[in-house]
Amino acid sequence: MNKIYCCYPGGKHKALTMSYDDGRTQDRRLISIFNEYGIRGTFHLNSGRLQEENRIHPDEIPELYKGHEIACHTVTHPTIARCPLPETAAEVLEDRMALERIAGTPVRGMSYPNGSYSDEIVRLLPGLGIRYSRITGNSDGFLLPADPYRWMATCHHNHDLMELGDQFLGFFKKQYLYLMYVWGHSYEFDNMNNWDLIESFCRKMGGRDDIWYCTNIELMDCLDAFHRLQFAADNSFVYNPNAEDCWIAVNDEPLCVPGGQTVLL
Image (tube, rainbow, N blue to C red; front, side, top):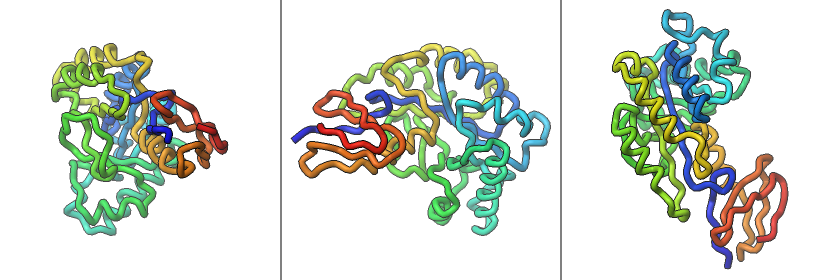
C-alpha cells in the first residue's frame, strides 16, 4: 500500500505564519518588512476602535493588508470571559460583519482580546463562522494546533525569536509537518526599540524554498482541504472534491492533486 502524507502547497513540510493584534499604526512598518521578505500573516482588528488615534483608518485597510489576512479581535476589546455570553457573541459577530464590509472578503479568524476566553466561548465560535482563535502564551514548539480554538503560537517575538527560528530552519525530516507561529503587537517594537529584531528574523526566514509562507486561515484551510480528500481503501487513487489543488506525498514524493479531479497513485 502507498504511504500517503499531507503536505503544504508545493509539497513543502514547513510553514511560517505571523499574528499581530489591535491594528495600530505601527502595522504599516511591520507590513512593509513582511512584504519585503515575502512573510505573510494575520492582523486582528477591533472594528469599533478604528477611528481612534494611532489606529489604522478603515479607508487604509484594504490596500495596507493586501496579501495578508484580516481577522476578528472583537469590536471593543473587552475581557470577554467576564462578559455575558450574548454580549460576547455580539462583540465577535459585529466585528466580523464590520471588517467584512471594509475588506470585502470573508473574515473567519480571531484572537481572544486580552487573552480572555472560556469553554463556553470556544463552543460559541463555530456558530459565529469563526474557524480558529489564538490564545496568548508561547508553546516553544512547532506542532499543528490540536485545538484551533485554543491555538497557542510558537512564541511572542520577544521570546527567543531568533533561537527558535534557527531551530525551525534546521528541521529536515519530511515525515512531519512543522509550523512556526509568531505573535505580538506591532507597537511593541516602538516601545522596546527593537525593530531590528523583526527585520533580522524576516531577512533570515524569508525567500526559502522549503517554507510555505501563509496566513493563519490559509493554514487551517489547507488542513481542512486535506481531510476532505477521498482516498481509495488501498490508497491506489484519490479524489479531490475541493475547488483548490491539494498536495500530498506518495512514498515520499510530492504530488499535486488538482481540484475536482481523481488521480491514480
